[in-house]
Length: 464
Image (cartoon, rainbow, N blue to C red):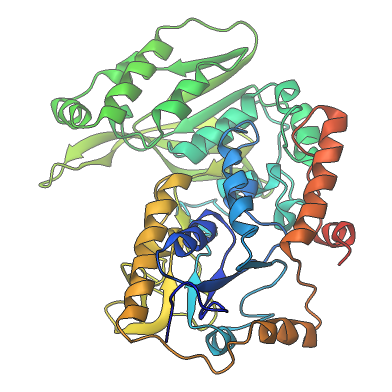
């Protein structure tokens, strides 16, 4: 099979499942590959593209969302098509994609969360942070969720960037959020919030925090918010001090934390407490609702490999709270009929080439990119080199003579299939109609956009 540029029609047909950063960076790497003539169809379950950039990035982080301008340019390429509102496994399946494309790339991210595994986790008022994030960002699946903000204290379990985002949103002045693209229903709820203190729990020490310098430093800029750090937590044991010295991020984090610890109260505003060496052991409730969290004080123990792990000290305390949000990691979820590693919660692969189960043989024509490939690590930009690696494996398959020949590669065949099933798929031009509508409403209110959060309303605006 020829894949040289200059042919009348692109000869390599690729389907990308997932229109988030991993999907778009994969398309970009394919388009940039020398001497490759390909056509790329990008599928997504939602009518809207961009994945976590739209539904995961905090509304007050507008600069991060500017990456969508690059994705817009990719989608505008003549050999790229967008099929939104198409659910893999329902509207189209694995076998059908393999029938119509030489190669398929799964770039669906990590859509679920890790549980704490403690009693009381099922109580009302106990939620994964992923749902809270999706709620305030206007994800259609979570727009109707409700979160109890009627108590003075909320607790966020975790000390990564998502935990920091969630805690920050809870204590930020709603008037500040009102000029962002936060979902209207979330802004209304936060305006009525009674939360005065947010406690963020980390099971290990400040030297092992997973937040970045930028996210942590941002907490110190919150107007009217007192960030509380116990100076005793910043007195490191020798092993933690040595670990921190090996990491520029950890070293800078400690500097920021020491500066925050030295500040006085910010007046009568809200408080954000960063509490380290603490693990939740039980969520306590009344009448099926969260009323408190039982916490155990930890100590750090150095392993043979130099890794600092936490273990309980037997010292317990109880924090009254009406809301507990867990942010202890994302998990990939299986795709129908696609190999899956249920232990690692990702699609088993070798440098992006899908394997038929963990340690199994490589599956011809199927590839993976992003969090569903490597696990939930890194930032948006991390998906770019990840995609480049996957595309290299894709091109190796083609140039090595191992590429599959699909039974029906005609680009019109996939359109005919979706239309025969009555699938109300949307194109990128359709998305632009919604984009213009949202930004127009945003201009009227001095905001980047006002998000539409119901799929049917989106399709109506798009004319679908």
